[in-house]
Image (cartoon, rainbow, N blue to C red):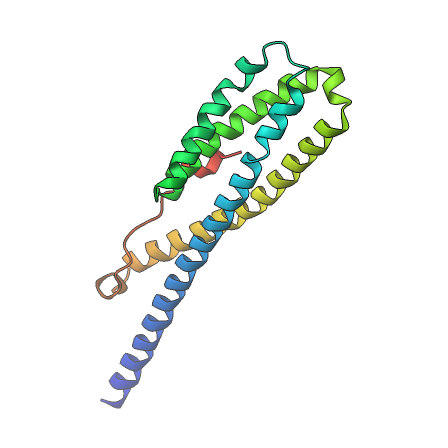
Length: 177
């Protein structure tokens, strides 16, 4: 009888620790998502500067920036509504694709490449991208850990007791930048 009470107490304590760990991990993931959104927004806020600097140096300037301007408008509308992180990331992936396209065009222009303003903005965006990569790596590790914990939980008796059954989708972010 005494052995049963001790075993049950240990299992109950383990369950509580497991549950608290999952909740803390979910909270940490949400914090990283918020930081990532802020970093992505600040990087995207540098695009108007890039637009103005390259205005006199690109032949079809408005055509080059047309798609990214549309995506910026979408980003502003997403900011007005409380959208999910994955919806936000979909738009940011498209913005990132357009930034790469614009860089490809701008680096072919020798006059633009020698401007200190362009080099400054380019370096700022590269610096933001490095910070974004660091956060994405942390995000991937935490999501993988959470998914593994949820998988382990579902193979044990804990699935009856713990209300954590939502697996976070991570497929979109695997190839983000």
